[in-house]
Image 1 (cartoon, rainbow, N blue to C red):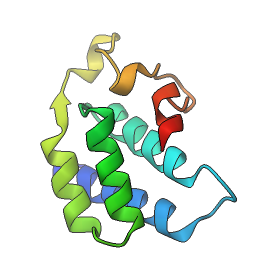
Image 2: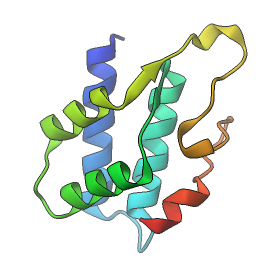
Image 3: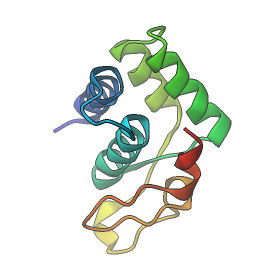
Image 4: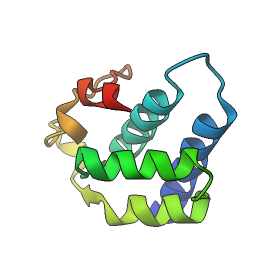
Length: 110
């Protein structure tokens, strides 16, 4: 799978989870954590401030951004790292990455 596909899939997942409200609560937190984990497992980590992240989420929730805008935002806020080293670099918003998704404490602001 190439990086272009990863970002498109991540953007589609993010939009779908936020706009379709599959759960009673926590849709934005879950979307953010899942997209972060998906990209992380594919060799890139999201590097964004909480303010930038909140602006992304609000734009998507308000219907101002669709997949193309989300994909562009993701591409502008990532850094690549070697996945195969067995060690991970500093995760997004200091959230631990493991075999299960752990929602970062900072995302409770969303």
